[in-house]
Image (cartoon, rainbow, N blue to C red; front, side, top):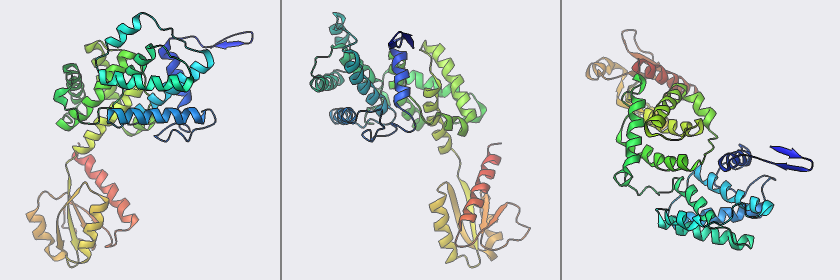
Length: 357
């Protein structure tokens, strides 16, 4: 930021200026979700409502939902365009290269969507924006995940599939994540990688408001993904991938990690094996979907049940059990109180850690 007498201005590349404005515009107390009309005093409500309508129009024309954070990026792009035009007029002159750039854009369906939105902006601002703004909006749309989920991975560009596979392979080299690769992970990650490559090419950044929470929750995985992305950048000669993007990608691997956990097998023991046991079973299944209750038995049948189910990891009982039971046990009430739930959660975490050793 520079100042000379009564004038203040910002110097920097277009990408850096947009990133700075975006960070100021989008805060934890500002725009975070799809309800952009409930904005703070820094936002003009009429402009905000107009831009929100354009996002709705884009979703309607593309037959797709634009999820967070891409909707926020598109909102800020259009809102900043309006504010900058009002403050300084058209900052980019239409040039002879515009038609060439527009003709080079591959997805003609998206080009028409962009042209429609820019025409609406022309009417709203009572002006004619340079055609390069169609190209700018196109870059943002192709850098967003708006494919509606109907595109099969086999239909994605070979480069997207190669980058996705390489990234999964690099993360899988860490002993903690050796078996993390799955078709489900590949599909979901590839759909993220496709617009990511466009963002890197177009120098478009995405703000990740959950970044610090992701770092705290998955510190090792975050570092492993960061290292894998560094190798990916070098291997495919990409622009640098920042921590904001790293956080989003870490979430995909974290989800795969949670899904790959083997179920914890539970044996339920009650005084009768009926009535209260069925109630307890229903409560546990509703609260802990990752637990597999292999059988519900009466206390007197516990020895035979353990002999028949050597896969059992934990015995949950409403009565005290003899010391001869040599696997993990937990005594709870048939009503499965909040305290019981906390105790079971701690026991499940302990068993998980034992399994991962």
